[in-house]
Image 1: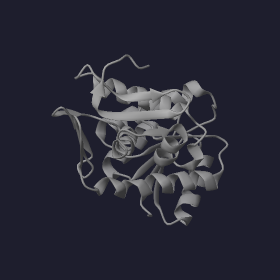
Image 2: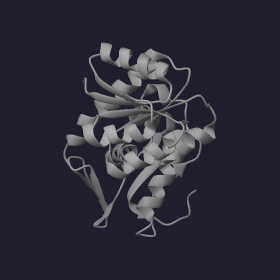
Image 3: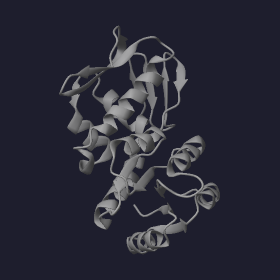
Image 4: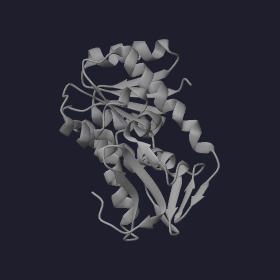
Length: 231
């Protein structure tokens, strides 16, 4: 479980607290109080997970997320003093995998870090072929009708969970718990953002829909697609 974690935050007190807490758990930790410096460390050090503040001078945490997503699939956990849905959605839409509001509970944050790192080995299982889809968990890639589709790590995890239960209705709570952990079971904005992103990417090349909404319940993945106009 222990691995390398990069913490980017312009508040030295936050980086000190996180360095001490993470190091005590056996993680190798590097910190940066400047987002530009943090991205340099990310490129040179290749951490297993990044924790970044959302509001910083210079580059924002959203821009940091986009820069990391342009380079790889490293899990990103965003910290912010703002507890508004709009800021959460903006961070998730930029590629963040999780969101924690300051002031945060250190034990909860550590639990989320462990949960994201635990999920990485799940991607080494066999490929899944269903309908129009081939999901290669080893290569962390997906093709639809033979066309490769680029997904962020959390988009991939969400599609993988849907594909493993193709045709079945999966509740909001079950999806949130499986992909983000039990602590996210009551944060449906995660699903709204990522289901919307998946639909756009999967349907852009085919003109067909694959993720069906079951109102007030959850979602159903139909790998052969269906006609309609789901929102």
